[in-house]
Picture (cartoon, one colour):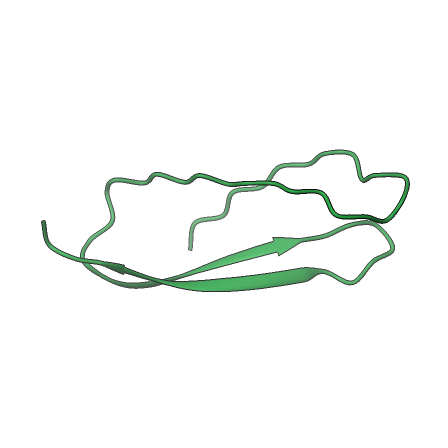
Amino acid sequence: PLEIAFEEQAPERLGTIFRAIDVEIPSFEPGVYSLHLEIRLPGRTPMVTSRRLVVEEP
């Protein structure tokens, strides 16, 4: 598995904050992969979302 982590300050108040992530890893072999994104904030339940990725021959 490949893991990428970063930290930033949590907001003082609850609310919606939009973020985007762009990952480009060109050395993937063709196949089916799962991408799991987990967000952890101190004192809160972790949030997880997953996406299925299909890499095909060019």
